[in-house]
Image (cartoon, rainbow, N blue to C red; front, side, top):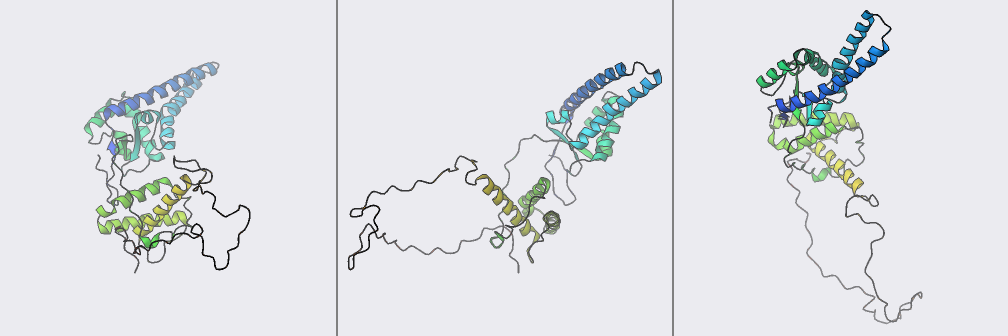
Length: 316
């Protein structure tokens, strides 16, 4: 694993990509780009046969820049670091802090790639990747990026701790449609690792995540509720909604879904009772044993269940 640590002192479990996988992804990307460039060059040569030599040369330079330089930059920007070769090899370009790249990162990588990949046939990029501890080339160093592996053997995921009992059902009316998946992932990672963080750093991280969640939902937490408990309650509400949506009657999800009425116990005819006629009780007659249900034996009175240890303290 890499030693990537965010500004909130959270260690990211990212595995940097090494030279063999990066070389294979680069070969696929260059093959696709050069094939597209050759097809476009042939089409331009046929379309500009009547133009003079200067105009044809200008068009060839423009097509070279747009296809071999601009196209990879646009693909990495729009796909957030996943080109065709990286997608095939299970790689992705991320920032040094683990976040998705933007246009300026892809632009710097593409500009440096002209020198260290296209002009030197990848020699400078290979040497830089071998020398770098995390397999970065010069374009990654200047852009502040890192190529990581996405398809790795995943360890068993930790369960999110349940919310405090006094917060169950408090966020049933919260609108969670505007919360992105990236924020849900950050909140889940914090909740599973909050007992391992320094208390002061963990409190700051919880407050930052709670502020982002409030900005997305537009609803502040209840007064006196800690940020960590607020995050746990909202995550539990989302999990409950997902469970209701998946296992709702008639959805057909899961092998345990039941369709139609649930069959009850089959009862035979009661002697002395004619179907379709309402029988009034006879004065002074003892009730029939079949008509009176058996008395339930008194059992021990259940006491209050002990709340699970979650590390959240109720509000004062």
